[in-house]
Every structure is written in structure tokens, then in C-alpha cells.
Image (cartoon, rainbow, N blue to C red; front, side, top):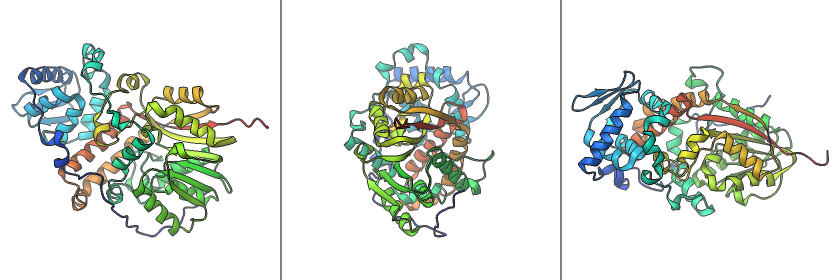
Length: 428
């Protein structure tokens, strides 16, 4: 049984400079409705209404028309702008229209869950086959090269430590928790995060004296719990904001002799370790670099060692259909990100490493609950977000992101896995 590291009762984070202002002035695609001719709007309206009328939703347009089979309500306040954005920018336009306040939903995650459950059929099959012609492509500037990855990570994780502290629990853990039961109680979120972390450390065999490499530091909770077991931890991050606060937490816990946190890309890792842990990092790697990422795990792991990997996953056919498409989540939340499928993970391990997938456990329902708790807390503290300088457009962006992600897990479109990868010791 592990013991929690010591911590102060309260922990003030530091807000560093944001990489871009929070407001509309730096989001011109939200501030201005795109030019769209009447035929573009008419086609978009036809496609949208044809898709919606078959769904268990109620979509009420400002002119009075309502479509759908009944269910969660979506209110379209500005149909002209709504259809113009979707006609010009597809699902990116759908998200931008929400950010602009042109539509809303009393139960946003409920409405988005219905859409996520029917994601594969929302766009008519003929248009699906022509995706390469109409869908936006991922910008070359968001490739996760060593320099590109630093920029992409900074755009999300360096927004402000205080922003993340608004909705995360006191452990500052920004990944899926593991609960004992549902519905999850907010007061138990920190314990559920520790349960997840301990499960990963157990998978990796982390104990007194273990040399542990962590790829993706977060704000340091996993490194602290590993060090409390007696492990010697090297943790890598590309976020200056996260590193600064994680180092403070390590010092305050009296574990500086056991934890080293480097501002370094995973490709720059050196040395060998008894165990490697990486939590929801692969989603930021990009398909182009999955082979490099998994080879790094293999190269850094000593013979007989173990890798514990936590990864969000999506269906393989949807990953293949959308992997080159620029999405709303990439444009506004996770630039350069791509969620893999379980098939893609296991193929990369098989084709590019000497590792073996020894175990895989999925627990997507736990992520839906984790995101619900984060979203509710962020909504309750919207005034504090405003005081930090994050305006209404940003707050709608963040609310949509959390609800959109929750819907993915509630619908089963997304899942989250814990993998155990092992490396044979030829000497045994």
C-alpha cells in the first residue's frame, strides 16, 4: 500500500503569460461569420436538417421550425450564420457557431452525445467519399516535429496554471480517473485520480529503487507518488508552466532528491530505465511520429522492464477516415493532436519495437464521469475564469471542449485504455 506525499492544504498556482489572448479579437473565424452564398447556405441547411430529423434530438430554429425525433434540445438562434459556418467549414464551423453564441443547448453534453453516437452517418455517404475534396487538411505548421511539438504543447498547457486549477482537483491530474462507482462524487475525484495513478505504477512494477522514466509530466502528481514509493524518477515535459509548478510541488514534498523534471522532448530522452510510464501523451504525438514514440519507449526500457501506457482511443475506421482532417479540437484545443485506435497502437508496437502487449484494459465510462466533474466545476467558476482574463468566447470554447469530450466517451465513440508493454530479458 502506498502513502500519499505530503502537501500544503492549499496550493496557489502561478499564472504565466498566455501564448495568445483569450478573446475573439484573436479568433477572427469566430468574430466574423464567413461569406457564404445562398446556394452554400441552402445546401448546408438541407444536409443538416436531413441528418437531424433522424436523430433523438429536438432542434429548434429561430424562425420556428423544429426537427428531430425528440430528446435533448438544441436552439439555433441565428440559422443564417449557423448554416453559413457549417457550409463553409463543416464541423469546425459547428463548433465556432457555438463559440459565437449562435446556438446553445440546455443539456450540451446530452445533445453532443446523440451527435457523437451517430458521427459515422451524419454526413451522407456520397459526401463522405468526397471528404478529401471538401474537408480542411491539417496545417503543416502543426506537425509534431521537435520544434512543432513545443509550440503545440505550449498553446494548450501554457495557457495558465490557474486556469487548470479552476476545474481540476487538488492533485492537478489532467487525465482519466478511476472511480469505485457511478455517478461519481466530486469529493472523491482526488482519490479516484490516485487510484488511477497507483494502478499504472503497479502495472509498471514501480517500487523502492525503481528507475522510472515518465513521458509527460503534467503537474507532477504521478512523479510524486512514484517517488513516495522509493522510485527515482526522470520526468519529461515540454510545458514550461507545468514544469515550474511541478518542481515547486516536488520541493515542497521533500522529494527533490528522487525526482528530476526536464524540459525535454521524448525524442531527446537518454539512459535506460526499469519502467516507463506515459499517461495520455500519445494523443499529442501525431501518426507520423508514432513509430518514433514507440521506438523511444523500447530503447529507453531495460531488458525485463515494463511500460504502463494510458491512451485515449477511437474506432479504427473513424481514425482512418479523419486522420488527415483538420478538426475543431485541433484548431482550438489540441493543435497537432490525433487520437489513435487500439489497432494503430498495437500495430506500431508490433512493427517498430521488440515490446509485447501483455495487457489492455478499457474504462471509457470513467472518463465521461471525470469530464462531467471537470465541466461542472468550470461552469461554477466561470467568474473566476473571467477574472483571469478569459472572456466569454474562451469560456464557451472551453465548455464546448469539455462537453464534446464527455459526449465522445458517453456515446462509446471514444474509449481510454491502460496498456502493459513488456520487454523480454534475453539473459533469463
